[in-house]
Length: 136
Image (spheres, rainbow, N blue to C red):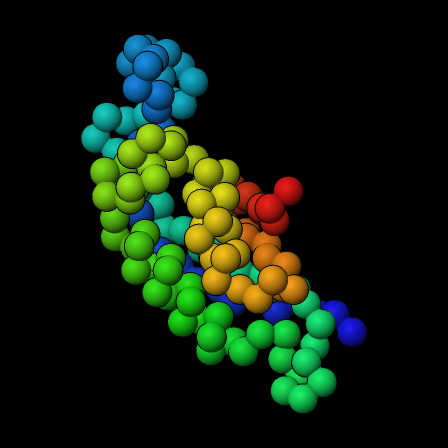
């Protein structure tokens, strides 16, 4: 019997959407105000969902305390109150769009989970703008 459990987390971060190989005019035309050279910030809401068989002995898909600690140590400590472009190594060469942030979070967390567990990341950049990524 399979189930999906989810843990919600939060982090605040600044970023700038742009391509260094493009002119300021082209960046502004494509990314609008999100390409502000002085950056801008979001209060990100993160939902980490893990799907797997329910353990017959514990009744867990995954121990939620383990999931909570993993998200805190690997994601919140890395991203919270950071300028993603300047302070998070992967985003020095990868545009920190919501899509790319979700993929990066997935790639950080997936290897830390048991192989038999499926992972889905939902990242809210704003209450109305969000992305979901499950490794496909």
